[in-house]
Image (cartoon, rainbow, N blue to C red; front, side, top):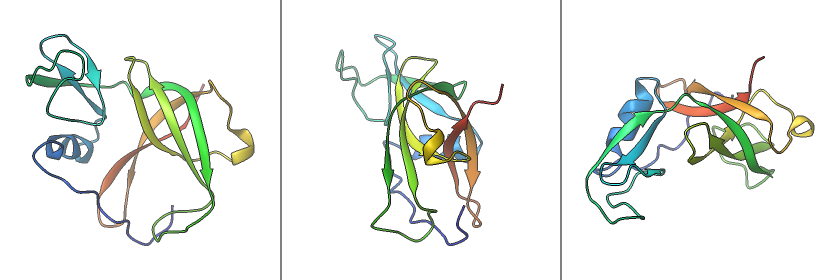
Length: 135
């Protein structure tokens, strides 16, 4: 990864807990307490049953590549280009948008197995990314 620092995402009441989980090395997925629907990104209300009660699970970090796009520009500090942005279907059933690392653009395939790796910026900020699954 590039050595410059990334812009940090906003962290507030609805998602601060998620970033704390990432800082501890976990890929957390919000779960509705009423209907057990998993959702990401975190939000206050369940889109299925409108419940405001929730908890979370810790994902295995494994899944398959559902879709992707390759960004060449505009180039922002803190990222290596080309940047492969992926939509992962996690084993738990929900989808998660992230960056694919340790993989060339030519090697990306729909349906390929991927696994989460926790990337840490030079300032200690942690962000879940994915790479091709090992083995």
